[in-house]
Image (cartoon, rainbow, N blue to C red):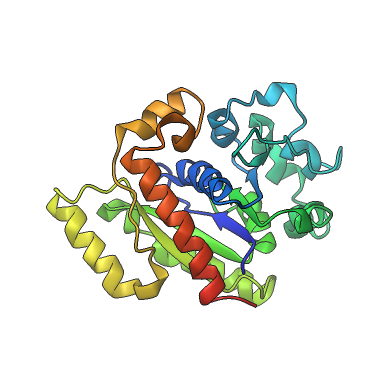
Length: 256
């Protein structure tokens, strides 16, 4: 089973942080012990769970060598979280000359790795050093994509980066799965692009697609996950099905 999974897409606005939060919460609902790592300087994942980064040590402090990885315990049925902060935006420049800079996160996680069933990393919308650290640490990737032509542009570049990290740094990074988000099958373009993706990537696609649902926005406004906000919503059902698929997908096809 793949344990450390990066949620990655260098295009913003595709539901990456939303998916990290709700997949993490959904896995907890299925009895898994989950750690979420907020590697995005925007700290939206941290904010989504009501965490004020100013009150805690963050992943920036850990990457800078000031503390071990700072884990905030989750409430009932919620994942533990390593928060982020806007200060993380300068980390790439500060760490640029550090030896082994692409493996800092992996070293930080090694003492706690065994404590979790899944560790999900919310990557920033870029392919810089922070994302490189996430990929060097990970065993798999989930790539959220919105069903629009613009969202699909550049996916080849993303696959190239994943391949280079696997070939040069991290041979354990041997799988990825694509998750269609914010879908509305009433729109012809969404139906067409869904068919295109499934024809092109086959079993690399989650069967479940995340339907557009205002409940997701409402849950974010309340700084909570979709299950805590409305467990009967379409969004909650979709994300729970994704979690079930994820457990089966990485166990069946990529175990070991």
